[in-house]
Image (cartoon, rainbow, N blue to C red):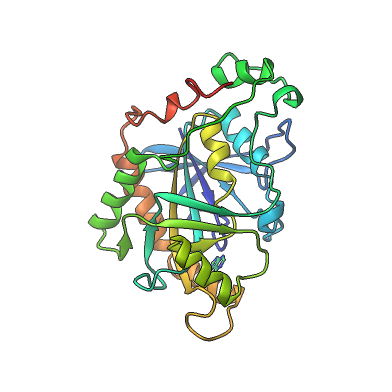
Length: 277
Ligand code: HPA
């Protein structure tokens, strides 16, 4: 099952049939929105809005753990995360899609693991995740390939077939927000190797990976990052750009769901093997 997480400007899915609206409670609190079961291309996906209805959760207060745990309880094995991002790389333009393949974390103090050692919540379940939590283990996951190669391949294929402007790879730099970055911070991120900048890519991806899920990030470039265009940045331009891209995002999703094989051939599922101390 695929779980889709919508970012800024995406609080629902365009042109899909809603089958069910589900409220989930988790040991980590309530997810940021109800979860919608929707029919897409003969398949079904769950959809969750990262910032919730009315954009209630700023990036640093998104209940990332509750969101991922809710997906786990619903049987989600693959997460497709959608993001609005600023372009740091000068080759990236507003309206472009980016299928990110690596990350730099510049956030501060966000809770970014389920495995708290002795302080872990011993949760029910029969799988490796539940076993490690019950045993109060410390876990270090590998992050050499955070984003699922199988999902990325099918996203790139969908973007290519639709003739959309896209970049098949890119490094996502995640800042703490909620303010936009300063021009000096963007120059620093550029030198560090960041291609796009956003505020919500972390810790979502590592939490999904800790639960052995596949995860892919599809970014829409909404603006040149701070200092690049030499003008003031507004939330309004970010949201407007995403709204303009809503139909394209829906098309990509339909093609992606239709082409992705059921079987996971990527190895993401095995991430916990050898990860405990
Ligand atoms: N910076 C951080 N987050 C963002 C941006 C940006 O320029 N654009 C959209 N989300």
